[in-house]
Image 1 (tube, rainbow, N blue to C red):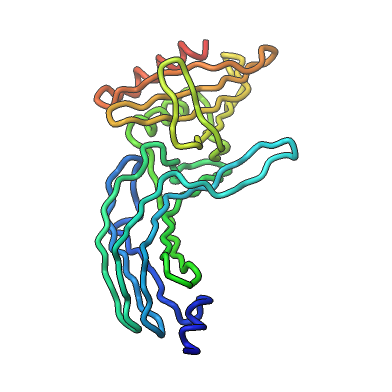
Image 2 (cartoon, one colour):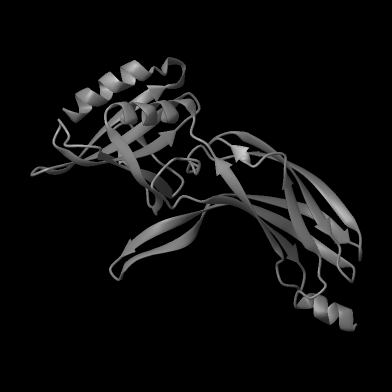
Length: 247
């Protein structure tokens, strides 16, 4: 009885560990994992478990800015049943990352972009033991080529973060409740009079939409956008497109 009481407050209770096939992924990519549930000191009924794709977002409010955790996507596994004391269950799991998952593996002077997978057990009368696995998210070919084009045009990536909210342009909009901003500044005086450029992406299966915020000296902010077809990614063409948009 004493062990059951302890388990009900999380002491000696079952634990969960999600073992990913790889932590190195791209937005929209499928991933595989094995969820390992290890029984505690007593038998426990597992009602289910939740996996959540998480990021940290910046929120702007009347009281200023603050950061909070944000659920990009969530998956639920049910009918797990009883886990005996000291026993171990292995549950295979396959899913696809949300296409709007922020990228983390970028060479920015100040990178505030973080993504992880969080797994929690739903145990009757017990606290919710959780497991957190950091993910390394790489840009797709369209985004990485666009970033290379920005470098060629004389702009440096100085900051990356994820903000709460939605992007909306005439031909596309985001759906995840957050969006990433890559902040660029010119290496020297810009021929286009630009002081700062912020790029945000809405990738889809076969194309990536880009919303571009332009901060010009004496003219304030403005927005332009472009769409990159994944089967027509070309560095030279992207450089030309960006120059026309910046002019």
